[in-house]
Amino acid sequence: MTTVYDIPADMFIRQVAEELKKNPQIQPPGWAAFAKTGVHKEMPPENDDWWYVRAAAIFRRIYTDGPVGAQRMRSIYGGNRDRGSAPSHFRKGSGSIARKVFQQLEAAGYVSHANEGRVVTAAGRSFLDNVANGLKPQAAQNAPGLLKY
Image 1 (cartoon, rainbow, N blue to C red):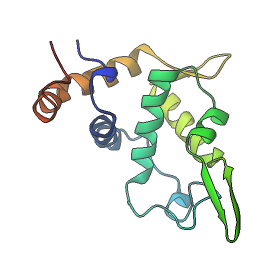
Image 2: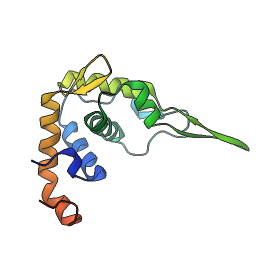
Image 3: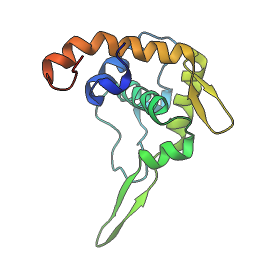
């Protein structure tokens, strides 16, 4: 069985985002069209479907690194803030986005809340592994040396 670890992240996240669009519990909040993803950004994302892409990336990160919490997600999605002529400083990303995505993934039944943070449920693991299994032929065609079984 092909798992999340066997598929390149960019290809996998794009496909999971498309699948999450079909789920009615994963919807961007009203403020998502205007929000920046952190104080280190100047503008909101240009991609109209950025919420689904971020949800897919967070979902993959919970699968690979879990259990994780909102603070770790803030650090992962942070960046350097441009302070003009002063040296740049690292700033964490938006915690609200991470929390809302966690809550939506929990409502969909893909993630559960543990003592240490969020972990992927059996349904979530099955969902991600099925997406990875569907991408296996495409990944093998794009990177023939990547999948050797």
